[in-house]
Image: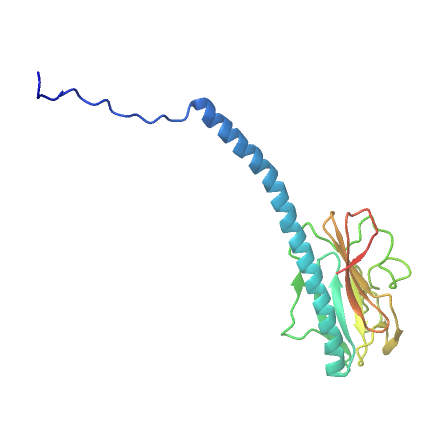
Length: 212
């Protein structure tokens, strides 16, 4: 009829959803991306831990040097190679012993995957040691060698020296400490003139040391 409006019900608009196949494809892609990201993230975290431990070791060696000069006595960084720890010790003439100050304590490596080792690298950083090696083993007050240790020793003037019973030897460049996680190697070297340097080689099998 003229003048009347239609009362037909409007058709409700419907939104299309994802099909099961589309959801499966999206989930599969996310799984692939996650599988690629997790190893990369794990490696990045490992690199940061190793780098952090190497820099902390470098700073502690510098602190050991300052401690020797400020205390007017010998000081050494005592490294437990198997226990993966290190600490600063100063020589006390009375009673004639190496002492760890209460404020220093002992520091451990941050990851079980790290170790004091240079892995398969066979060449030391340039202008450092003649042959790659950890610093010489620490000595007791009586001069006995302490197994599975390495010590970086400074005299009262902050010069790196060889440790001898009843005194110190002459300046030396044999002091160095190496860390690895099986993927990269960091080395901290101490020159006979007291220059402390941090090095890194990557990949592991290439002895191409880069100064950090």
